[in-house]
Length: 113
Image (tube, rainbow, N blue to C red):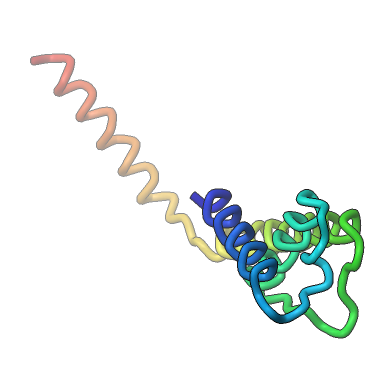
């Protein structure tokens, strides 16, 4: 779903930019691949809320690299958050032993029917 949404947003932006009266320099070209990469860059910058800033990628290669690092950064941030959350979970050894015994009991009851 995410990739489909990303693709639809990218194509929508390319369409709006190419039919608008305003001049969108990265999109107003005859190169469809370049238009798509510019749209993908805009979509990723918008979705990830990194913004556009004074310094932005100007070439297709730079935009693809920026897209990669935006999503790699998001993945790393999610991984770190998961590890922090995992370290906060306190596991009660007695509760684990009780759960193990309960599962054994249920297994014996199913097998003896």
